[in-house]
Image (cartoon, rainbow, N blue to C red):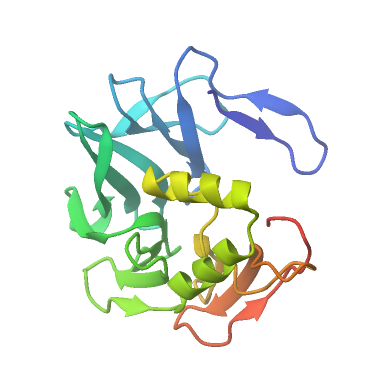
Length: 239
């Protein structure tokens, strides 16, 4: 798995990494000069590395993989703070035992545990992190000083029950197997990201339905305080 870039105006794919490694979860630094990504270039598991945005040179360590873990989904802010998810594994059973949101650099300076969570998205100013709670499946927000932990969405469990009830028998077997193995293909809420001014959070929600009445992944937006949620896409595909 290598990184690629594409010009959003004229097309044209650029090869950013080319070696025989697993390079995943790319995101731009706030100044656009670097791309942060997860990679197994530093040994077993995944670490956070950075590369010049024009590609193929200047790979540096951001946070090297801890024992029995993977570091994924890096996201960075203008003040230099990098937020990411640390996944801890049971080496004997190769099962996930914990998912936590961490930060590095910025005001906290050193690697710092924020809270249990996944899919972090740090605000452009670096003061807040939106994330998905792996236990209740809802979208939350926390300050990078670990204050003001706030739940923004509710009803994730009920959404997933409705989704499961709409599946065929064969689909339900696969759905249950994936959930047992913690390999869910769909989640009630996922993939938060911020608008550049930090006023709104975009995210994926299954609160809406497709033409058959099945809960469906669409793009939603809300204010950063959780108010005024609005559905932006409505169709049968997974957005």
